[in-house]
Length: 304
Image 1 (tube, rainbow, N blue to C red):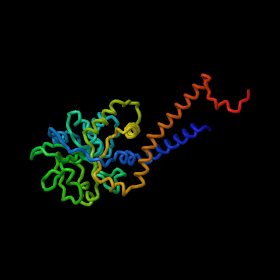
Image 2: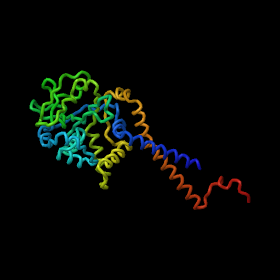
Image 3: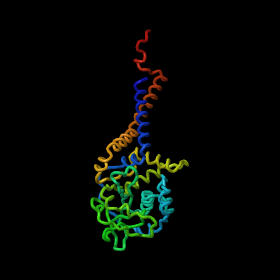
Image 4: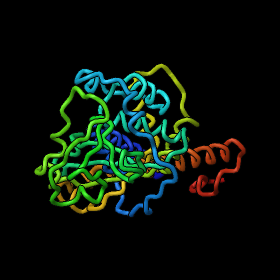
């Protein structure tokens, strides 16, 4: 076996191991590799969003609708399934709505409430931050799309800064009647152990443009379709970053998972480049042999 062949075998094994690690913990892979401790710019929005009319138009499908997870990879399809038809969990609803808000040229942030101990199991909550048109006037604050409510403390709309540390009693000011109880996500004990992550509308828009540009409907199952496109986005670095204020707190709770998922990411990025280099090397060597331009070392020991 030549040195190039040995390198190719090692690279192939690294790539296979990286895929296996990511497939074993897909939520952890997608989430951890999106984390960054780089701060977001100060949030500035021009026009307030009439959030009440938007949320009231989303059908309430109850517990069964929430459990019907939307895996659509294309943002327009996710918008249709979640916002128009009313299916999916909190993340599905916020991500679906984000496509509609971008279409209407609104600025916003996607806000992730990450319980430090269990966020890798998908047990957090996703809400939206925007300049909201409220009865008291335009305010930058949070809206819980899944709960169809504005989180408030003593009548004041919450913002991200209110979610750190000890949080006073939170009331969910309903925008429409709601069949589910979302208050447990605002329990003081839970919020005390929550780390906040945020993604800007600009990063979300870049991701949606990328998906729209490369998306092909091959008739695959929705879940597999999403895994493929999210995986591509993560590896090439266009999947939206999650800016975490206290990333060290999450990393300290799950050091092995952080190391494992980041190793898988870099394995997926580096191994294909090495395999491509080996393939090019084989092609060049084969072309030389066919053209009769063999290197002199190939004739070492040959007697004339």
